[in-house]
Image (cartoon, rainbow, N blue to C red; front, side, top):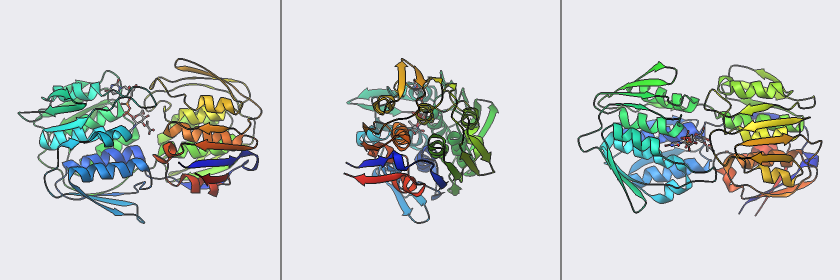
Length: 422
Ligand code: EPU
């Protein structure tokens, strides 16, 4: 298993430009939505090296889709040649939660499917109760057998109204996928308005779907008969952009991230500014430099446009080097502080109580052997390692490779003293 060896003593003041990849969490629902289309869809700016994308390609192929990969151009072309298989196997759902999106698309197209039910993941329980409650409103009946949800709308999916008890990103996308081809009108309320969900809506609308925003968190969907394939440029990855900005924040460096809409990170950039980073935004790039000592802060994660839970682990790592006491409250997942014990091994002072973390900034960290356990905690530990004195060895790096394209190459490029080992 791949490990990263990082020498923090020689990684101070990272510098350079990172070109953001297409957003993994935008591409996955777009790929699932391909099932609904009459003819070929073309996705551009796809982060083909991210392992979740590779898994989604295999999943779609297992259902019968034809997937063409143009690696150099970062393009995926997906065509539905024949009727899809209606079984989404456990092996895909267990390694990639977004596999559940095939359920909405298969229901939308065929009114029935069987999908493995995943349990939790390292972030905590990952229920799909809202997805199922929404599908039920759309005229579906389901049962659970041998770990699979068997779901069917015998008389077809019928438009209805569903209010999400709390905002769910994948839940919103799944219900949209199930209802774009439905009979009648579907109204979804308290939806996610993360940029990745809005990108899915834009993509479906350009293919002929009739989806209208009717309030800040509400949409109305008029079912249409078919969707026409077309070409779409995937939006930049805001979490990747934030992660690399944090490399400059923690090492007193200067980093520019390109191909990212700064509006996707408005709240997060405000926080980085408040703690003492200098930030310049352009139409599609963000530049961060840090010269001063970092100040502490207090944040609470929440759905977009609030502070993203996916950015929190990286901010926590940065705050371990601030001058004072910071407080974080995580409101989305129950187990999002997996990087904290690893940073503590480097000498960081972090106390976790339930959903709250108190971080007492330190003048220095010392390199240590660490284990990463989820995608974002991997980057948080890397941040700690690059700002620590001496060597750190980070194992189970594969968690990071699920969502960061060219991670090793990019870190090396900006001046992190890093080596790969097995
Ligand atoms: N929830 C329920 N019931 C449901 C659905 C969700 O109780 O039926 C709860 C969850 O337990 C959680 C909250 O609602 O407490 C929000 O979960 P959500 O459904 O929004 O999360 P998700 O769609 O499974 C996506 C991203 C995550 C990101 C979260 C929050 C994808 C593929 N995944 O997950 O990204 O952290 O939204 O923004 O889009 C990652 O990229 O590493 C990642 C974990």
